[in-house]
Length: 253
Image (cartoon, rainbow, N blue to C red; front, side, top):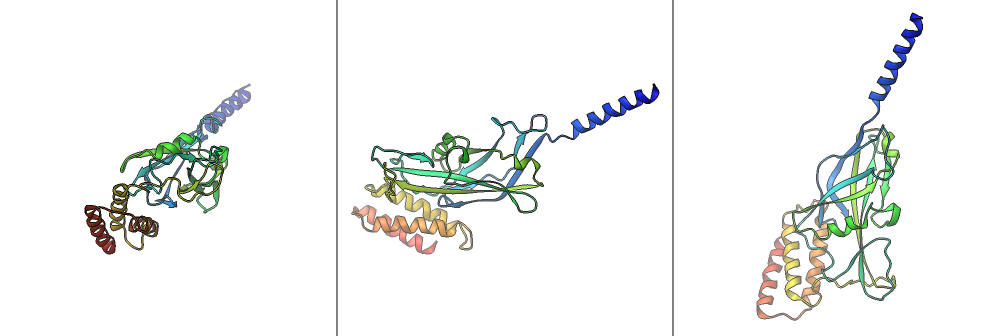
């Protein structure tokens, strides 16, 4: 009788121990605060851990999401306010131009193995948790922080920790019939002052970077594209003077 009682006590203790050993959460940290891809100059990753709570040691299929914070920089976006932004996976047939834009997530385990990957050009179930997250990021002002979510891959739960993640980005201009329009109502195509403002913001961003910085080439390319647009536009004497001053600043950046 005593042996049976002892067995029950040990069994209850073992069950309690196993229950206490269940993981309560999984977490990951940024491998870098830099965002790769065509929107690299416009966003940066907030350097803080991302955690997901587990229910009874398991993921919740509907609620387990990685929520990554991105901070908007002062670099001009490669498309204007007049361009409708749609997440990848969207498709229009009315003939009007629009911009496809997106962000991707890659997670590696402690050994460097990829345990989750969502491409920046993926939509639907393979893309972000909500297309509203993508649209909201482009409404941020310089310095403001937004969030974008992805459903947690089950492989992350059993992966060897610590987990590290990186964020990628992409955008493309298309017409309503799915073709590449190449312009997508780019900002200030008929507005010199708007383009000059973008040119100045991009130069300011470039001047803060070292030429060895991973984002330097992307920001410089954006400045060159704006310069190429402005050089062919008709300007007032005041606009020409401002453009000349910005060119001098660009040469020194």
